[in-house]
Length: 301
Image (tube, rainbow, N blue to C red; front, top):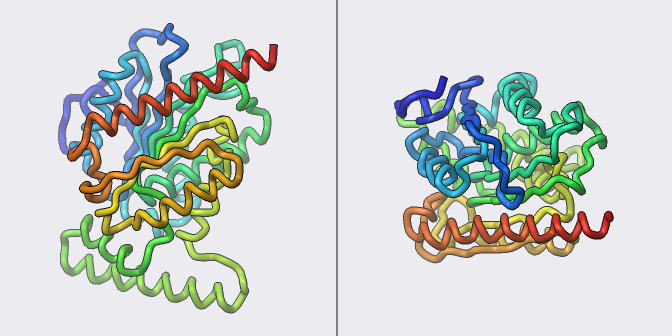
C-alpha cells in the first residue's frame, strides 16, 4: 500500500525491496505520446526527501506513468556483485509486472523513460542492464519500444579527490568516514596496480564509462534512443569536461546525444537553480523519443 512521506519512505510509493520503491499507476496511460514507465536511479546516498523532488515532478508531468525508484547506498562500491544483483531483483520483477518484457508480448510496447543520477546511479543502471541481458538476451525487440535516457551529473572517471569528496558528503560519522576512505584509497591503488600489471582496465569508474557508451545499456534501448546529458561547470564531483567528452564520443558512435550545460548549479542540484529549464529539457528529450519512434514504425510498415 502506498506510504506517506517519511525518513524511510516515498510518498505514494510502496517499498518492494531494499532501497527500491514502486508507484503503480491507478489508470492505464492511454496517451501513446507519454511514458508509461519511469525508472529513476538515485545518486549515492541520496535521501528520499531529495528524490521526492523528482518523483513529485514526474507525477505532475506524467500522472498515469508508473515509477520505480532505485536508491544507491555507499556500499555499492565494495559490496559483492552477487549481493548487488539480489538487491536489484525486485526491479526486474516490477518491470515484468509492468509488461516491459517479451513474456508480456500481448501487451502494447512499453514507453520507458530512464533517469540516472551521478556515477552511483549509473553503476546501478549498468548492473541491471547486465542482469537483463543475461536473462533475456537479444529477444527484446527494442525497435518498437519508445525510450529515452536522462543522465544527470554523469558519467565521469573521477579523480581520487572527487571520490573522497563524494563519500565525505554522505558519511557523517567521523570514525566510519576514516575507515571507508581508507578502504577507497586501498581499492583505488590496488586497482591501479593490477591494471598496470595485467595491461587492461579494471578501474570501476573507467569500466563504467565504457558501459555507458553501449547504446543498449538497458536492453530496450538502442541507437534510436535519445540521451540527454545534464551537467554543470560548478560541479566539484563530476567534471563537466568529462561529461562533454562522453557525450561527444556517444555522438561519434551514432547515438543521439544532447547536452544541457548549466553554469551555476552544484552536483545533482540543477533543478534547484533552473527548474523550468531542467524539466523543459526532459520533456524535449521525451518528445524526441516519440518522434523517432513514429519514424521507426512508419519505416517498418
